[in-house]
Length: 223
Image (cartoon, rainbow, N blue to C red; front, side, top):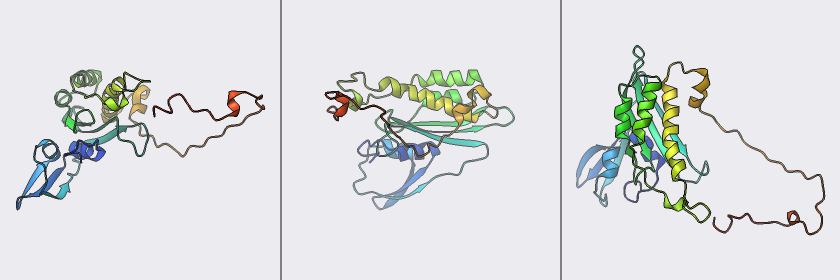
């Protein structure tokens, strides 16, 4: 679906960032391609069979993180997703082998090539982060017209663009062997606990008060 219908797939982005390869049976012969080639090549796969997916094991000092932002945790496609992978040299504190895959930024998952080049060889300090974030500004992002509504004509384009740098900032801090306490929390992965809610009313509303009747919210019809 990610290949043929431009489905906003979290899995395609993850596999692409992880460096996975796909084995396909096509026309009686097998071929093995990386996920980027698989997604973007023009063949229709009408008679092809996907045989296997191989995900390489992370090497020593290699890190991989995935990110996703959506309107709901479940049953909602991402406004933007990403899978980042990089190796940190313990001696020089520099980065190599950087792979930055983004999904929903384009019709299909894609690499931020300029930012990858900026990150490779960068040092784990403010200058390395600044260079990478500056390079990310060149990354193309398509508009998600479904978020352009009467109530919000500007959509969520600015928010989606901000996610690009937010994800990168979190990953960069994660790579730092000893991040300052003032920014270390940016790299922490939080698990949301089960939430509860309760409403109490200490007064009885007078007759005719709108709070005595169920009222739809302004955006109800639009949603």
